[in-house]
Length: 138
Image (spheres, rainbow, N blue to C red):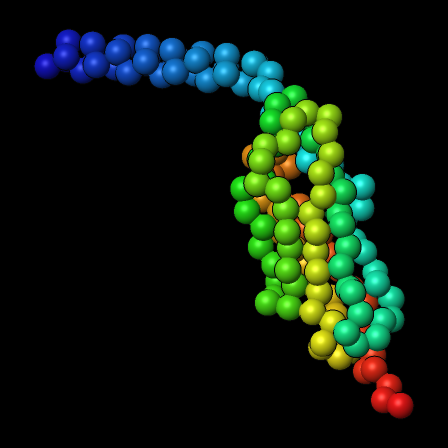
């Protein structure tokens, strides 16, 4: 019985040290990941008239080592509409995320769009803000 416990202990210790070595090798390898870098992450429209074109193009670049894929984009409300390319972005290339706000709504706004990707910095929050004034009737 003591021999069996001793043999099992030696086997467990050996397996755990092998696993630790394999994990250490994985950590030391440089993983070639994409990196998403935005020129700006916030845009202030200021004060605009109701019915105006309230949209902005957020420019981003893949500053990483492999193809960047935007996997999902979440908006903070239904009044904001993001549009983006579903195609992978090669390293050192640029693209845009077009964000539009429904300017029929009057008042101040502060909305976000969260970008999820396969990049090292896998989520980035973009912000739009401003104020919509009612169009004056003549």
